[in-house]
Length: 166
Image (tube, rainbow, N blue to C red; front, top):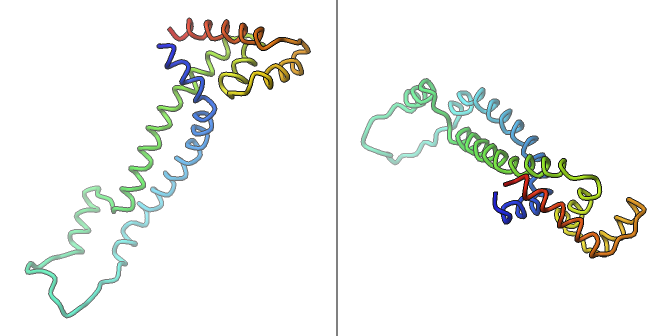
């Protein structure tokens, strides 16, 4: 994997993690909605009110109930159900795509020691300013490091990640 891809995955990790958690909740809700709509599809479609006017609408004789019965019998769905199912498919595709980033970055972070992981998470993933990372590192580990010292830790950690990802 290219360094640029690794850097992009690290940078997008928090957003993708949150989006995956959201989609993992939303998809089952949409699936329940689609199932419910499929169950009531016949009643909802048949109970549509017909607009009657004195103007003819066409020259052919039609059987709307017959067409509806044929559509439902052949596994067809109404437009509303089709839209929900398309949305579910799109959200599952997005989840699968974003889950790759979450899984990869999670694995890379596991390969780092506690201090490396801290610096990478705060500076690379969360994009905090170095002065904040220095202060937080000192509080977390009781060790005073300069910005340059933490950069060295970050660079070593990133090299480890690049090796894993290659």
